[in-house]
Structures are given as C-alpha cells and as structure tokens.
Image (tube, one colour):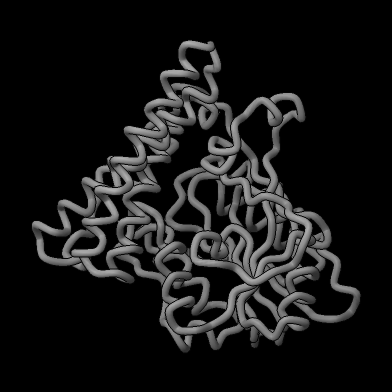
Length: 330
C-alpha cells in the first residue's frame, strides 16, 4: 500500500542515466520545513541505457519514496500522463531530468500557491554555464536554451509566459478541469498546449522567482544547428497553440505578420550584427527568422488541411534531439 504524500514530483526521462542521477539527488534534498510531504515518481520512457539500475540504486538509498515506472516509449506527453496516473499526491509537480533543484525549489512554489490561491505555480530556471559565457549570450539564445529569467516579483503569468513542465506545481483539480497532456504532440510543445488550455479554462497561473532550478546545458546546444532546430520546433509548437485558441484564419494572418517582422526587423539586425562581427547576436536573429518561417509553414499546412487537429506530425521530433546532435558531443 502506498503511503500518502502531499506532493508527487514527476520526472520523465529517456536515456539520460548520468544526469538523471544528479537531478533526482537534488530533489532528495528539498526543504519542506514540515509543511508537506513528497515523493518522486520517475517515468522511464523505455530507456535503453542504465536508467533502470540508476533508479534502483537511488530508491534504495533515498530518505523519501522514489518510485520508478516503465513508460510506453510513446513520447514525453504520454510519459507525463503516466506520471499523473501513478502520482499519489494531492498536488503534482513536474521537473526535468536535466536540471538541478535548489533546496527551496518546491517550498517556494508551495508558498506562492497557498498565498495566491492559484492552482498552478511555475518557477525560474537558470543555465548551468560560466558567468562570462552566460553574459556573452543574447537573451534570445538564453531563452532557447531554456532560461526562465529570475525576476524581482511574484506575479500572475500572462499569455506569453505561462509555466513549463520543467518547473511547476499544480493542484490535481487542474487536470480534472482541462484533461491531460496531448500525447499526439510528439514534436514537443505539449506543455505549451496544455497550459494554454489551463489559461482558457480561467485557471490562474502564477510565477515565483524564489523557486529556482538550474538547467544543464550540453555543449551541442550552444551550436548553431541545435539552436536553429529548437527555433523551428518552437515555431511549430506556438502555431499549434495559436490555432487552437484563435482558429486557422486568424493564425494565417498572424503568420503573415510574423514573417514580415522577421524579414524586416530581424533580417536588418542580422545584417548589422554580421557586419559588426557580433556572431552570437547574428545567430540569435537567424533563429528568430527560422522560428517565424516554421510558424508560417505550420499555419499554411493547417489551412490546407482545414484545421489544427489534422496537423500533428513534424519532422522536428523532440525525442530525436540527442541522436541528431550527438556528433557535436554531449
């Protein structure tokens, strides 16, 4: 019989045994101040590396419940749903397998959730890079690498900065109100689509800068091929979100505006950055142009197929990331 806990932290993983060990170890050290109890539920989405043995060792030596379940291999959205089904807590948190949690990561979201009355609270995320390297990166590139800026105030989230599943705490009633993650979105963006539904349902989402996770950044993610790939995937994901919220006609108009802005604004800044030798800034502008055109291509396909729900696949598959970029190192 499973012991009752207040919060279940769900971590989905696939072939990341080494970094998973670090992520789960950080979650075992979270502060609670006696305010709540928690467990860690790891969904191993059909990994072929040493993930199973790593999880067994972690569970054997942990000071709290760590439960591992085997996912179907159908992708991260299906794995998140499996984690929800397995979770015992009245509250569900999500954490990525390539992050390190600060000790106050969970308790600060818990406090904000209780103080605000919002059923959903997300935190900040920093990048695990040297300070000088981080300073040299344009804000656009840092966002593509997963940064969620540490701001000064706790505040409600807007449409453009809803939480992500790397760092979020939710009441179970959120799933009862809006359903689960869309498992057909194998190209990623399942959290973007999910939290857009949360917002449309009128459920408040808040942000707290006091809850911080650190995102591990492998070397290949700093290279141009990965950043362009991430930009294209982002464009596709946001096109899906906007189609569901606006409809295809408004989506098409928005796509035209995005492309025009990309060509006129980002194109001009790309030329200037290239001439002045600002390589990172030039790369940031290339990424924004890639994202705008990916958004427009997705919108065009949806318009031709008469709706958002018929456009689900993508050549930019989320799960293929490490295989695609393995030649650049880990």
